[in-house]
Amino acid sequence: MVNTTGIKIINGTFGYKKGDHLIPILKQINLEINAGDFVGVVGLNGNGKSTLLRSICGLLPILGGEVLIEGENISSIQNNELAKKVSIVLTEKISGFNLTAYDAVAAGQLPYTNLFNQLQKSNLEIVNEAIEISGLREHQQKLLSELSDGLFQKTMIAKSIAQQTPIMLLDEPSAFLDFASKHRLFTLLKDLTVQKQKCVVVSSHDLEMVTKYCTKLVLVKEPSVQIISVKDARSNPVFEELTAGYL
Image (cartoon, rainbow, N blue to C red; front, top):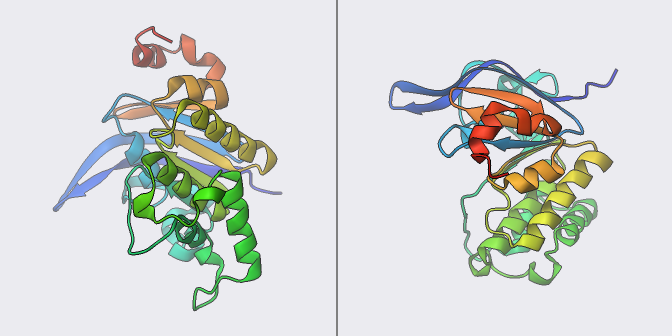
């Protein structure tokens, strides 16, 4: 039987280390997100949305409990194999000496290359497809340093698509996009969940976007989280507090 569980958290405690001290932010988290789920992570600033995403993909240490990726404990997955299972798009802007947008997207295929990281024809076809569906064809030869914030964000999303992971995590992916581009992005992500049964998790302050396109919401209110159906959002007190009644 195929395991449809993308992410499962059992009694998870997440936060960060400061020197020898552990600083927990989210505690005793139990959460399950399946293949085909398009989940919006929402909450006030500083409540732990980014911490949750970074912990799920291994960028932050798990302070307690377990995170299972497709049924396997993340602590037992080698880095190269983890890169084939989970991709993440962060808000931070990276740079590289003479790296083009194409180079950045192509890096998404590195986990699938040989010892010398050589891209074969099949790898290049996947890279080109990711560039095309992300709307980057006219900008692919621009240096990363030349890209606007919006184009840079699209480049990182294209890299995540090229990485071909069953689980995609995106931290504020629409932050620098114009109105139409935001809708195109969320439409693309929704299509990926439906057509390719990916598990897509997006943290966002764009509540109108997540309630329009996502199927579920993770409501983050330190130190706990809860997962609900989008249709139940407006009757949820945490969501009502988050919107202050304006949505």
